[in-house]
Length: 87
Image (tube, rainbow, N blue to C red):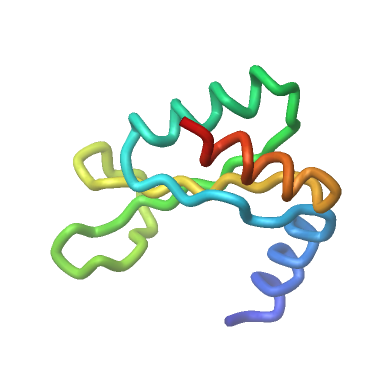
């Protein structure tokens, strides 16, 4: 990983922690709705995945599947996890 990528990743995730990864739009929208209803701030990082190689692709491809990573502030991790995983 290049130095620039490591620095950007560190800056992005400085005060955030990954709480949920969604592999479908449905699970993504459900998780976000739950976080919004409990007024939990979040950040999204999405990755396009090449279905043939299962690797992230560099170009925005409307045909390829996406997975979403949902990050919250470190102080909200426990609450966000509970909210997302409740039925």
